[in-house]
Length: 69
Figure 1: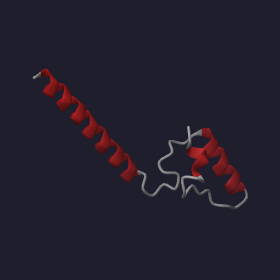
Figure 2: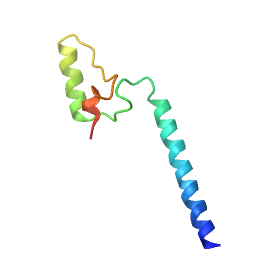
Figure 3: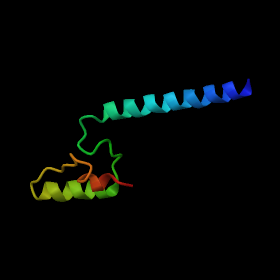
């Protein structure tokens, strides 16, 4: 019986985590950096590109180096 309780807890936590990640992904859908919290490197890159008249873009994961922690 205890195994079923442990399995139920693990499954419930897994489902809760999936719901959390889906919600976070949906909230940052329009963000070109995929929901980067705003690391200092991203801010510096945004400022540098703004000074040069360019738009900061992280549309592909390869370009999203600023968002890696």
